[in-house]
Image (tube, rainbow, N blue to C red; front, side, top):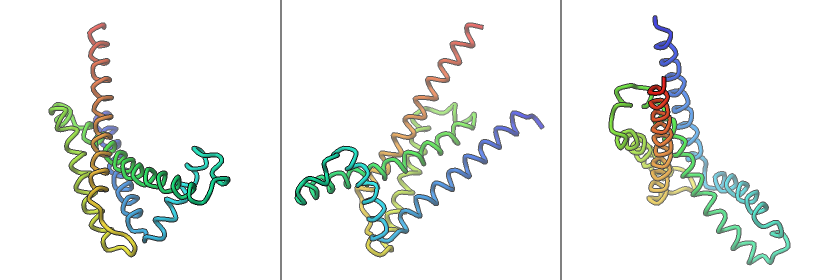
Length: 173
């Protein structure tokens, strides 16, 4: 068997395993009840707050609450955006490992992982509706989908740059 084919399928298998692992991670975040989820994001929020506002502990309780709530919102939404951005990057890399897909329009190569993220985000939010202290939010599905779009967009831009560079190198030799 051709070694290139073996390596290509090994990489695809690895990417599929990473995709499944990451989807399980996302599911795990959604399965956490409201108290556990809040505790986790509050811990991250406090770390961010201490970085951006070193004098936080010296502020009045009202000012601390205002800062904490603003940062908490950003931390939570950035988490949504990032976790689906990563999922989309993994899907994009898997798709680009197939020559027929690489020859498709770039628009489709971006849209396929984005739609996968949209569907997974919607089912994930639905799942949250059955978890104590959690509720599904349409805005989170939108943020997740935008993260997916951004992840796929980054990969397609990098792929186009690499492809053009390789084409130029090929013409020089």
